[in-house]
Length: 387
Image (tube, rainbow, N blue to C red; front, side, top):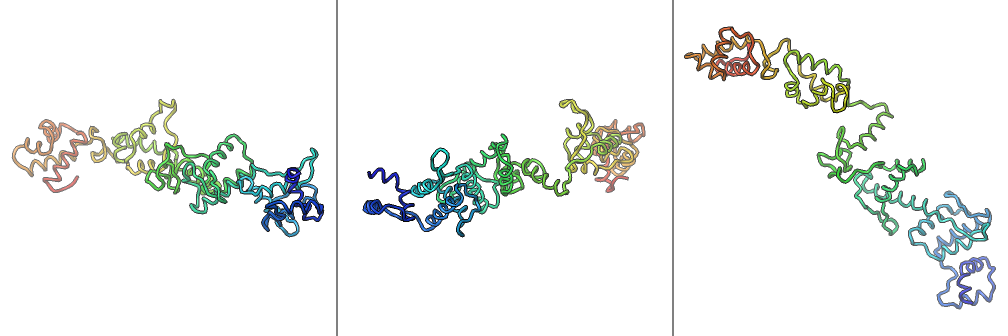
């Protein structure tokens, strides 16, 4: 008999409250050791009364989240009950009382909808928001991080990874996607371990505390795309690339004036290979010359002015330049030093044959390297610059 009474404990408590419990059963239960007619807290007691009232009036227990019954926030209380159930902190007697007060369905059973999936979703969202309240962003969250929520550790980092995977498979609703994107620092792609660096380091993304390596404009790929999307929507986006055709024409004119590809790379401080792909077809990709160039490298190439004629100050060492200026400078060095011409040629760093050809006028052109040597000697011994 006692076992039968134990199985009927929650209904007995409800009938006791309603004054419908038989007197002999009430007395028998009261004599049992540890028996309580009010095993719930005041808050749960009020919520249970509102729940029973809702079921009695509506005939179902599908309670909306914003439901209010007799001025009691029933929807919020039911949500808290579900949270306690999945977190393992709900009193068993309350769970039994909820089921006992539920209406009988078409299978002649009493059921309470616990909604574990939506409840876990809300719990993990709260855990993520709790982390954000301390760090202001989800960027930089360590792998395997857990948040202590309502006395239980919540593996929020693993949950975020599952949500990214479900998003790739198209398993998230539009409402869930919107809730995740509203979290500060949320990204749909996680940084691989090999790409992670110390946040705030020179090679790290400038969007602190993002742990990814900087790829473009000081940002990692995910942060760059997020910023680009936002600026496109606001109409403030400016591209990092410009048309390569005007830059290519400028480089060709420089080449015609004796400033070749390698010399231009040295003067402008740009990569020689980039200059090659600007002028020539890219055989590795089976495509033509570059159609776009970075704004920064284009500006560096534009800064190299086109000379009126090839001049030894800017062209490569072996580029021929007019010998007139070098002849005047060499003659002045010879006259200043006196003595033999061979000694003057040696101090200029040129051979006797080269010096003789320049000084006598047999050579109308000299290499840029020879012109620079003569100019250095002229500056050192005659105290003057280029004439």
